[in-house]
Length: 203
Image (cartoon, rainbow, N blue to C red; front, side, top):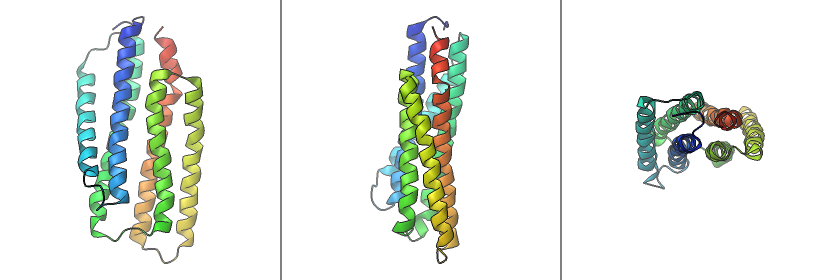
């Protein structure tokens, strides 16, 4: 692969965007199962399938030779972020299984977490789009939305600190899950921060 090969570089970027979308699919399935463990019976299997494909494709990409500095930089950077998103999806799936023996979290506490999850998943999906488009507007949108995730997380924590009667296991789980989604948002931000550099380096 050469730095000047626009077609080859574009194919690489499309493949990396696909990895991010697979991570998004895994995160979305795990999130659906967390929200309603008895609802969507296919949520966990769908998440596991997406996660398995993500891992397989990351291994295939890592085994391929990358000829060219731009290709190496974008592949290693985005591949690392996609791999981290996959680990976060796995953590969410583990939380699904761990919470199956517990009563659902009260709606007034779950709704703020659901908002954090929705915002984080939108950021991951947006990062895949921005990676392909290298749109300055798209970069700005994703980075601006990162602030919203932090604000939602703060509101959840304020609520938890006021709720004296909430089970401490539920409090711990909600904080851990919110941290997981916040890390997903951060990984999306890390991808888009460099997307313009990747695009400019390929020409």
